Image (cartoon, rainbow, N blue to C red):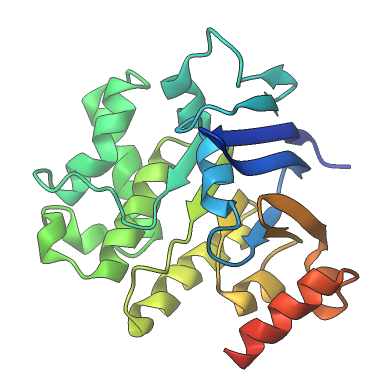
Length: 246
């Protein structure tokens, strides 16, 4: 069995009196591609932000190689270098070139020499098809191109796990395919990924696991073909039927 990288145990998150996540439990192993699906407001993005420590969990544990990173005294930037994140809205630095966007984290967080960071960034920009745009600024790029740069930036930190928070939802329909194609390639290369997505074809064809969330809890999880093809819970069946109707 492949190595366990992340274990989410009894994770909860509340904003004031509003409980967003309740008793979340699941495991991520090396090479898993886990799609997290569910209606808007079900807690999917908050879960990802807790895993990346952009939100502080209210209860429970996030174990990274057996160590609880949700506790005190954790070096969050160093952890995020190992568990990277690609955002819905790209989060690129608009005043930097594509190349600089992909080197700044390596230099500041990982303390890599500039030359090494540059060659590393160029390798990953090539991988996502953005090498011709190294001197461009984000405002000169399409949404799909920006997201591919954001993926290259995350990859340049050489993480063990990549988190994707609805990476195609801010894109025009014609741009979605180019980003999903990059993600398919990463999955084929064995990258461990957690993907919050509404792209059901991606969840079905690329994911190894699917987690269905509703109202802040995990209603169902398991192999993607089982959860999407023959769900056991009525809530999952209703969501998928509604999604297909939509």
